[in-house]
Amino acid sequence: AQKVTQAQTEISVVEKEDVTLDCVYETRDTTYYLFWYKQPPSGELVFLIRRNSFDEQNEISGRYSWNFQKSTSSFNFTITASQVVDSAVYFCALSETTLNDYKLSFGAGTTVTVRA
Amino acid sequence: GAGVSQSPSNKVTEKGKDVELRCDPISGHTALYWYRQRLGQGLEFLIYFQGNSAPDKSGLPSDRFSAERTGESVSTLTIQRTQQEDSAVYLCASSFSGRPSYEQYFGPGTRLTVT
Image (cartoon, rainbow over all chains, first blue to last red; front, side, top):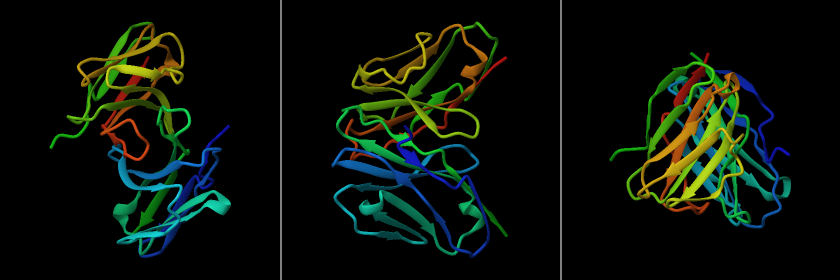
């Protein structure tokens, strides 16, 4: 079963528009970690944020913000005032703790295209 | 400070040949991971090393795949008798500790094409 679902395959916006990427996860663990990674056209994955399951406080970092809601098992990511450099594939990932392997289970990714 | 490096960056091989992919993690990182990314898809977990031990090999797709790590540093992923479905980008990641609270840092990947 897919543990992380990113329902949006592709999103295209015009520069300066806001864009929200959805992420829904599934786990039976009470302690787990959620991540967002960015994969620009160069291909290298860039870590954006980590959130543990006990911290539901939303976070803002510059133009990026994250909304974590345990009640709906969602960890959504918003880019405010998008720029062309934000064009990339964005992955949401889950790390569970009960299996002791600490692997990341990735969603399929959302391709964001920001047009000038 | 060097990040995770992988070699080769690109590899084209004929079906049936063996290939070896190399990963150099960030110095001091005890945990090392291998993932596979098929074209247009997300990342698929292959194997995890804590030190030189691999407690979880469940992600390896078949017995043609093997991996080892030595000196708590370099890791090699070997694919024997390559098949066309092995074509993908193979990504290596390392983290300070094999605990989920530590983020994984990824290398640039090795693009494998099996013809």
